[in-house]
Image (cartoon, rainbow over all chains, first blue to last red; front, side, top):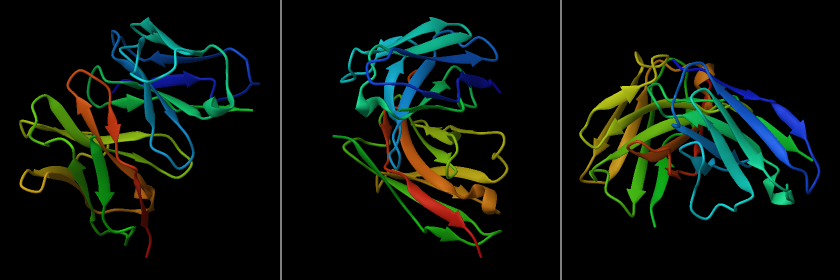
Length: 106
Length: 119
């Protein structure tokens, strides 16, 4: 199985901050990496696919980068609605695996 | 607009079988190049992929659950189902059904259903 390691597991930030979350795969996954945002009591929402492609309707303050084993999600200017938990997921091979999540708190 | 809706019992006894159904509206479960599957999330924890079924009928399961899980489809009702045998408290989770285009990430999720395993 491909292990996905996210860091940090949680972070505190302020409105307007630039935030970066990293995700490392235990083996190369090309660019088959997605980022999801999850708010309490809700299903995850896709933000980024193909490591760097923005999902339709997702604001451009979200960006993704990376290839192979190391990936990042950046939120350029944190807004109140962005406080949530973020997950990476690889879909290069089965079993599909998720990172442990990063909780972004005020 | 594609919608997925999970249904099934919210409480299952230990050692019994968990059965959930996902009803799909706005798309066909027979449509080419799509996977239909299940993902779960224990309370306060992260996401775990359970398994998927391709439109061809091929199934893919998480090895950690493979001996206990099966996914099937009912094209006449435009539904797909999850069965998880011999459940324990560790299977208590919110269960999501989801669609994933081939070569892409999950693009549609159900709202999720909490299933508690308890006597």
